[in-house]
Structure formats: structure tokens, C-alpha cells
Image (cartoon, rainbow, N blue to C red; front, side, top):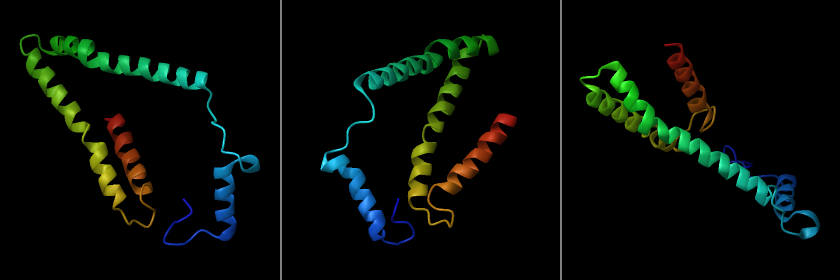
Length: 124
């Protein structure tokens, strides 16, 4: 974070960074999350993953039958294909943003314009 636009960190910034890495009295920094905190976090993530993955297994086939009972498999295939294509967006945008030399920085233009596209998508 200190090396933006080719500038080297100042001596004060360097000292603060080194002090933050060492912790108090030269000791290694203590973890900010306890084991219980991590277990709760992972339990939430696991539950959230189960809910999201059940969408493709349970909800999507039911909704495809509701849309068109005779061609529900075709609709299911189309929805899964669109979902698969959307999974390619993040790595591609990440690659492009890593190589970005925009005056706003590497990430800000993508966050801004991605937000605009997201808002427009919600409005439709």
C-alpha cells in the first residue's frame, strides 16, 4: 500500500510497517481472531455454501418446470450455461485490472463501473 505510483515509503512509514509486523516489545503479533471466532466464521460460510449450492440442485429444476414443463431440461441447460459463463467474469476482470494503469488506480475504475452495471442490472 505504501508503494503507490512508484514512490518508495518514507522512513516513518517503513518504521511503522516494521513495528506492526513485530508487535509489542519485539514479539510476533498475536492473532486477532480466536479459534472459536474462526470456527463460527467457517460454520457460517459452510451453511451459506450449502444454501447457494442447493439453488442449482433443488430450486432451479423446479423453476424450470414451472416456466415450461415440456422443455424444462432445455431451460435448465440454458440457466446453467449462463451461470457458468458468469463464473468467468471475475478471473478475466481480475487479470485486466492487474494490468490496469488507470489514473484512479488498479481497482477503483472496475469497482465503480462494475457497481454501475450491477445497479442497472437490478433496475431491469
